[in-house]
Image 1 (tube, rainbow, N blue to C red):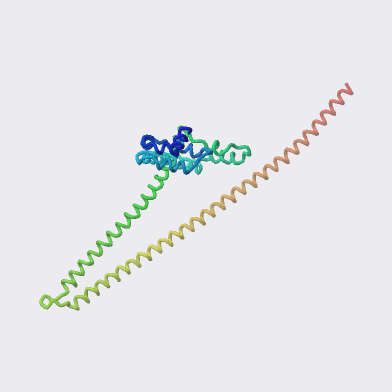
Image 2: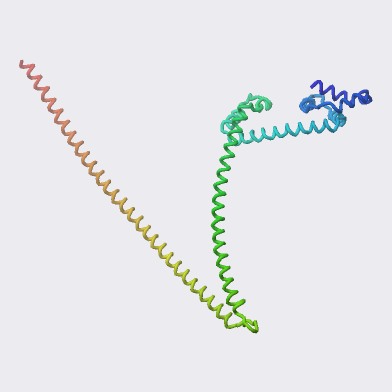
Length: 289
């Protein structure tokens, strides 16, 4: 940093400006942008001195300096993308940031946000790559569905186009060319009317056929819905029967258990009476013995 300051001070020195050899050497020397940054962060920074110093450089030196600054900016942009990805997607980093915010005696911002090490950069870059691959797979699946939809639409359009071509050929055959008088070349109205009548009848027949098909589909749908409802009712009734059977067995078991408890209480009372009688007999034997 001292060297850069000396260079900038020499650039504003009137004696050095008067010396042509020093100016030529200053124009051809290589400038380090990191030294300039260090000098800009110094306490005694003067923007006018920096401006005069840069004006004294040659175009080659300025182009090299601009190239280095652009490369450094690209590296910083990539690192910034990694930081943003980490801050958004990594739970560990979120927890650490919350702890730092809660800590009253936390470090300064310069110490807290230290540059990533090479292993950390590799780890987060690999994680970023995995995230991009997952996004790409999701987009591919969406694109496949869209392609299938477009293929179906293309097939439908192809069928419609074939139908239109057939209708065009029929129209040319019966009306455009075949509907004219061979001598006068005038349109024969009877043939044209017959063509349109036949076309209308054909369309009406197709419409009626479609209506019948739709009605049959609706009837089939209603039939399936009724079958489904019947199955639901049957399953509900079966569940109710099973519930009643289980409840009956439960009540039966509870009743049997209650009877067993009563019998056990009676046995205990008889057993206690027998124990008392045996104790009395033993006492009498001892007294009479």
